[in-house]
Length: 450
Image 1 (spheres, rainbow, N blue to C red):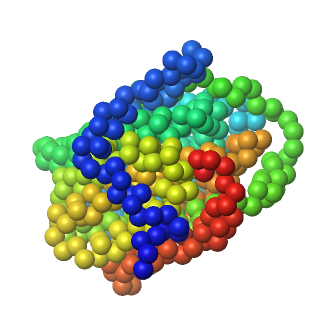
Image 2: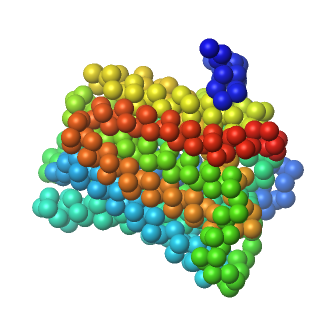
Image 3: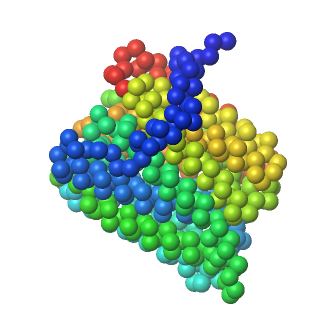
């Protein structure tokens, strides 16, 4: 059998993967990339956007692995974990159309991002920090965590169409591969520091006398602090696209107009199925580590950290590969191997074994996420970027509503390992849709870099 993945030779993966090459590329890529040839306003905006990514990574990665653990510590179970993920993503789904309408109402995109996503959304971390103090009864504390987490996700996705459109206008297409690789590298570096520290913060804090949840309180307070620094940096990013018209076609007509872009619609179908498959198992990996493998909070932090450490060195490689080979090829290569990761989780029996799986996952996800984001920016029609981004995010969030519900029922009926197997198989179904609706149409006439 030929070593070909959808027509892409496997030696593309192997070339340049020697440690010396990766370290050399990392040294070149980390740090704000040079933008001296760009107008000063754009150059300053790119630096501020880079710093926003750095502090957002600190904020996000402190908390991201501990929502489920926090809920379990308060007395929640598998169905509560699934419900938290599904309710949060449902609220995110419902936020998108109002988010687009808010951009048209304000006439600017940046206020929507700064006030709602960077302000109200991040304020929910303060509320989560005080849940054990405000609601000592589990019957109240568990719904409160689900509610505050839902509001956080609602606000983040409310601002997402405006954020995506601002990003597409700010970052010139000619430097997107190298710029997002650089930004991704610092995101991975600080994310690994945050993820590793989070487990020890929770372990240490929960041992303090007087409150068994003090570690979570400290964690969410630190998350809020770094998040607000990120919000300040984003407030300095220029809204390059300028004023948005407040009147025009009805929002429904704008969405219907996007149906005239069949490759974009195919990409949406793939994204829906892919994220549905991911979230069948996604909310339950950490719960599985705690309940079946007996992992500590520190080990959970280490498992998360190993993936982001690998990304630090992998992102420059994938950024260079995207610039040379194109987004579609990198997406295809990484996407073909990623479904094997949940299958590997099925065979873990000791708490340290997920470290190995996540090490491979960190490398593959670095390439997939970079290519997927670049491809999204290219495929969204320029005339309706807010609406295109909202439709994409809406379908992704809808899949993330359904996935945890299906996953929770599989876990309750047959256990965690079968949910991992179903997730892996479903990812290959999504890839088949990508090939049928997008790759087959674009392979022979795609523009350079796609």
